[in-house]
Length: 427
Image 1 (cartoon, helix red, strand yellow):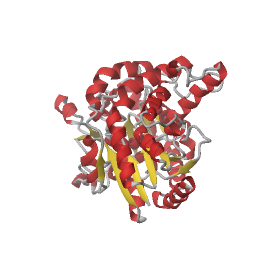
Image 2: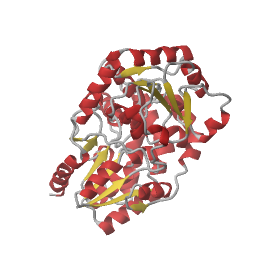
Image 3: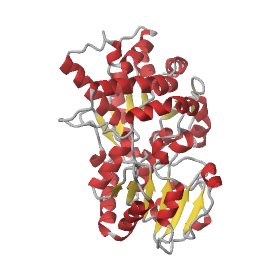
Image 4: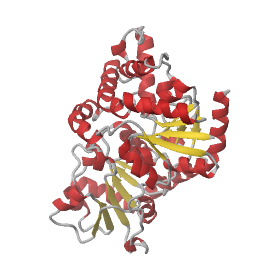
């Protein structure tokens, strides 16, 4: 079987695709990974074959301009909603408009879509797996009649929000096909499809099915055909090296701070949820060994570091987590999942997107604490850390979450089901 994986030029989003790509390879299938040029080195460093499409979307520059509007619209709001308090149609329309203009249209430009369609016509894949925001993969699959599925890296907040919007349309009698402003994502995708004389279908938004790497307790938007899969950490290739200090067990409980890849590439507010100075004040004198993963800019700004703290630029998170007693982070998908699959209690400082859902559910299942960034103080963070390090219930909750994740089928186990579904949809 020939499998094409479509991913955006964002390391954090691509990393969640790598274990399944290699499971397909080791099962004997041909795999290609299509993305815009900035990701080519990351794809080949993962030992996979790259298909560069389109041009550099310059996401850091674009989000520096458009990001404040997007963040202001979404920050601090419950994007999941509930049956009695659903997210409003106006909010969802504006959200779709902002994201399409600044984000979706950049990673799914006309040039990118055209290149992907041309590649699919030439290579003729049997299956296209596309990262949840890489609609170019869905468009190319739809145009060429190829079976396709979304590959999720976190809870399916996107589908949850979309279902809410479609429910508003049905309730209000809105015909989105005749009212473009009611559904900006559909209107934008319809324009792409019109260039190939294809009508819009909801499959180019949702996929024919999805591959979900979240444990059952974290899953959103039930009902879509779903292949569940265990999360296997892949934290990137550089530098995937175990340092000397990590080769022996720590003498005291080890606490890690990381802000994830997002703050290094696209300046996300969740990456600024706690300042380094406040974190250092919180851990100073704590009976723990602290590892702070900071980028060059943050390290250059440091004026002092607590005696119990080690500052590093990179360390493989999947190698570090088994030695940790607690993790403080922004709630990103890869960071959260790597800690969860190793049974590490977490303090999640999240204010936006699916990070908020992860934070709340982590606390609800007893695997950690959710601390909203607004009003967070060093004293409050220290109290939370002391609870994680001293109350056994958090370790028990984190271990239960780990067992839930390990019970899901591995990427290798999932491959036969993908073969079956691809054949079914081809038929």
